[in-house]
Image (cartoon, rainbow, N blue to C red; front, side):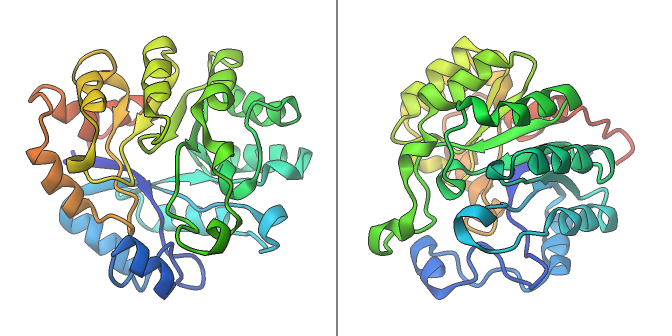
Length: 284
């Protein structure tokens, strides 16, 4: 049984690049050198005795960069099945091709969820043109991990690197999808600042919503987040680091100092994610 499940990991891609490969990103995130290889990442997580959810982002329509990383993600999981869980990604603007790729991710590649970043992919999740994606994810029992709130991607660049934050406001965009697809489990990635109170209200209101705590050190969590996590939403809050932006060692050290209840800590670190993903870790 691992000590924790990190629900938010950005692995190196096929070229060995990761989220913080550029010098600009390293200055902003203060993250230091990113992992040089998948092997380095796997060794790091094995040493910490932590499983993790890994993914990339398909934003080809907006960025023009060809995406072919679902097979790469699946390959990492095949190499390290006791260490990592794979989530796929599709470009919502690709329509039927995105739906078909979602099916392939689940049925051929063994993915357990799909990752979306509306600010980078420039789409509003509640537009009905994208509903076939949510329909197929609900049908296949895939967890949807969707970015919420601000992002460090593009921060400090002219115009924020073209990233528009409006796409990641929880209400109405994620809330509408959760209401229209009650059988779809949706994880809002990150405390959704500056809309965190919206996020907490949604979590209380809709039991198919979860949140991961990635991208922020626990020492910066707002009191309302800790209060709700300790009480009303304790079964739907998940540990996530945002590796390599924030290293799990730092996150866990700060988590120990934050005022979470003792009985809630194992739920956040392991039990909630294990239940959501349907994992049997008795033989791990």
